[in-house]
Structure formats: C-alpha cells, structure tokens
Length: 74
Length: 234
Image (cartoon, rainbow over all chains, first blue to last red):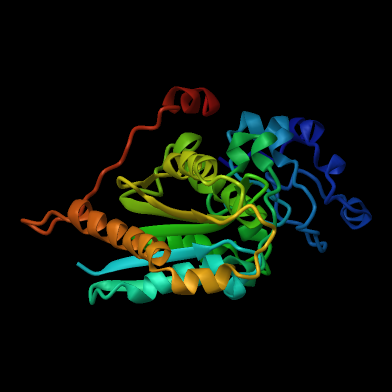
C-alpha cells in the first residue's frame, strides 16, 4: 500500500539519513519517496538502501526498497 | 517430456577449471533427446555481492532482488531465470578451506531472495525442481561442503534424489598440476559425475511427470514459517 503523503509521515521519514541521499536531493527538498515519487537526481544504486528501517515502511507494510529509484505506483 | 537441465559452475577459474571440465563432460555424455542442457559459468557474469537487506528487514529481501531491480549491470537475473525455467539444477563447486567457493557463497546469498519469497512473502517460487551437486577438492572434505549446500538448496525449494551428489578429492600433496590429467584418464571418477546427471534426469522424469497420464507435478510445500509471516504482515 502506497503511504500517504502527509506531514506526519514526513516527520517520520528517514530518507535524509540514507547513504543514497545527496545534496541534490536536499536541494530539491526531496523526501518521503515511498509516498511521493522517485528522485529526479542521479541515485547511486551501489549504496545501501535503508527503507526497511523506516517507521513509514513498517506502518504501511511495504516490501522491497530503493523507492527513490523504484517509484511505488498508486 | 522435454526436460531443461541447468548446470551452474561456481569455480572462479571458469571454463579452465576442473569443476567445469567434469560438469561439461557429464552434460555432454547425457544422450537424451528430451533434455535441453545449459551450463552457466558464474565467473563470466557480473555478480554483485548481496547487500544483506534482509538483516534490516526481511520484507526488503524480495524477488527479483533489489540489486537486480536497480542495477542493470548486475547479471544475477541470468541465474534466477535459469533456475526458474529449469527442471533440474546442478551446482558445481571446488572446495577451499573446507567450504564451497566464494562464488557459490555469493550466489547462495543472492538466492536468498528466492528462499525468502517462501518464508517471508508466502509465495513459493522454486518448486517441482530437482537438484544435484558436484564438488571437487584436494585435502578438504566434500561431505561437509555438500551438507551445507543441500541445507540451503532444499530450503530454497530443490528436491534432491538419493545420492544427489558426485564428489572427488585428491591427494594431500600440494600438487594440483596433475589433476586434469588424472580426471581425463580415470573413468571411475568421470563415471560418478556422469551418473549423477543421469540420476537427476531419471528422477526428474519419474516424479515431475506422471508416467501414466502425463500430468506435471504441481506440489507446493507449506511454509514452516507461516506464523512468522503473519506477524510480519500485521
């Protein structure tokens, strides 16, 4: 289930702490990729995704990861 | 019944290895018009090591693997697809310090996505397939190596027939130069590997298709972790 793009989820979001998260993402104020859309920045897929450690992931029963690259449809 | 038989050679030396030599010889010797054969030489593929996402959350370990999804340079998909399309899957590995090869270990860890599909995602993907093993070494033992590999591969979903492996260890003499010559000349050794492939094929023909009605086996085992899965999905 695609999480809701809410303020509450934004606060819980840990994207900013991810090894893939760069100044480009920060500059474009990109976070909460699972609820929104994939990043417009080049994302280094060789770095470790941490989506599974996020409360938004857990609460919405998400599976998989790299939502900054793999946009969740819906 | 047309059978698809897949060999996966996990020696880092690839086609120059004795592991490949024996697998190829056994596959070439199998004269079965109903068998489609393929050997994947794993050292020729670009394979990224597992990122162990499972340890962060079991739900992150999915099939296709996340690496496969995001990294188009990674070629593990050839192994995933090969296994899923095959009726018989035979792995070969040399022995290093009492264990299977590092390449085999890399593949096992990446195959966790298939095993995890059953245990964490309640979707059995690997089923109704026969497994076999070929193991080659010197002074290291093979029974331990075979046991470890069978442990994972049965959990992943392969069915092993009786005597499902062929193995050979050489002398404890630090002399590996003469191994190929020995393998080429000693029919007792090569016969074991040929018989292993034949054994797997015979078993596959017997149990994957009903000999009377021709119906394909469609067996799906219960996930022994189904109660854990319920908890994960709450």
